Image 1: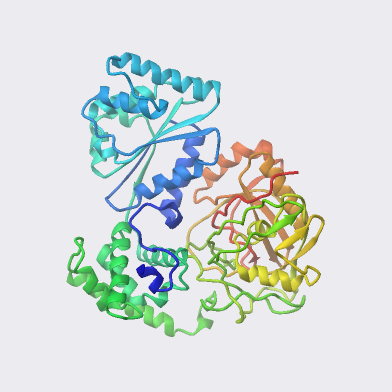
Image 2: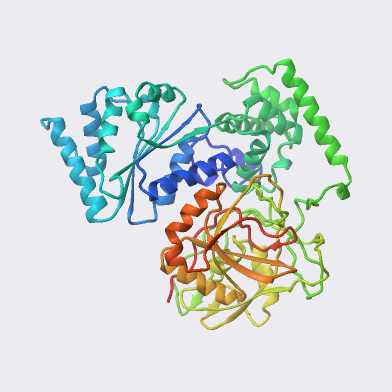
Length: 555
C-alpha cells in the first residue's frame, strides 16, 4: 500500500518530481513567473533565472511551459542538458529541437545557422508565433555556446526578437555572465531565486498536503515541527520536500499520528543534507517558539483580524439580515460530470485549489484547509447595512455547466458549494442535469483572508452590478482572447459588485500597467490598474490567486 493512502492522502504530497500541480507560488516565485511570462509575450529576448540547488528553478520552468501549452501561437522548446562540448554540437541540438529531425553530419555551422534563422522567420514573422527556447541547467553552457545564443538574439525584426530565450541556471552561471559582458549586456531580465522564509516554508508544507487531499497540515506536523523543518533545511524547497517525505515515512514506521520537533530532528539526521544546528539557531528556535506560544495565548480582541477555525464549514446566509458566515473553501474534491441538456458530452469540471479570503487590506499566500459546514464568524463592518443572502442568478446557456459556473463565480469547485446551491434552488430537482434556460440562484458564501504585508495590483477591465451580466461580459473577454476572471465582492459603500480582472495579480505596479497597455484596446475604456479594496470588503472568490479558465465559449 502507498504510504500516502495510509495517511488518508489521495496522492504523494512530497514527490521530488517538478510537478506544476504542486507548485507553491511564494511571492518571489510568483513574481518570477509573471515577469518571465510578460517578457516572453513582449518578445524581449534573453531572460536569466539564477538560484542555488533546490530553490525551485526547474519547477518554475515546467510551470512556465504549462502556461503556454494551451495557446496555439506560443511555441516553447525545452533543452534539458545544454552541456555539449562544441558550438557545432550545440547548433545541431537546437536545430533538431526546432525541426524534429536529425541534422546531417556533413552540414557546416553556417548552414545550421541559416536553417535556424529560416525556421524562426517562418514561425515568428509568417505565422506570427512566439518561439521560446527554455534552457534548464544553464550553468553547463560553454562560452562558445554562449556566443551562439548571442548570435540568435541578432535574429530580429524592427519590432521584436525572433527567438525568446530563458535560461535557468545555478549560481556559478552568474560568474560566467560577468566574464562575458557582450552576453550580459543582452539580458532583459535577471532574476535571483533565494530560499524560502519561515512563513513560506510553512505555507509550502500546507499547500502540498492540501493538494494531496489532506485535511490539514497541522494534523501531521506540529508548529514546532514545521519550525524545525525550516531551521534544518534553511528554506530550500527541495530539502523541505525531501525531509517531509522522510518524516511521513517515520510516522508510518513508528505508528505515530503527528510529527513533533524530535521526530523532525531524528529524520533530518538520516538525510544527506543534514547539518547540526549552531547554538544561535537553537536560541532563535526557542525564541520563535516562545513568541508563537505567546501569540496563541493572546486574546482575539487584541488583533485587527480574527482568524477563523480551520475546520469550520461553508454556510449560507439564509436571510438578508443574517450574520455573514466566513468560510475557508479550498480543497477540491472529485466531482461528478455536471451537464446541460441537450448537450451530452460535457466533461467534468477540473479540480482546482484556491484560497478563501475576507479582505483586510492585504493579500494572502497561504491556502485555507478545506470546505466548511457549521461554524460561523461574524464579519464586523463599518455599517449595519445587511449583506444580501444571494450573489444573483444566472440563466443556463448552451455549453454551460453548473460545475463551470461554480468554478467561475467562486473561484473553485467544492461539494459544499454544490450543496449550498441545491438548497438555494429547490426548483431544481437534479442539479447534475440542467436544461438550457434554467435559472440558477447562487448564494453569497463569503471567504476568509490572512494578511500578507505586500503591495498587490490588479488589471480591472470593468465592474458589473448583476451576476448574469458579469458572466456574459467574461465570455466576451474570452472571445477577445483575454485571460480574465470574475471577483464578486460586497462592501457597505458599493453593495454587491462583480469585478472582471486579469487572471493574475501583480506585485509590481509598473508590470501591471504594462500588462494593461497590452489589453486596453480590447478591454475598453473602463480598464484600469487598481490596488486593494476597502478593509470592510467581503470577497466571495479569492482575488489573489489565478483560477483555471473555464469560461464557456461564447455562443
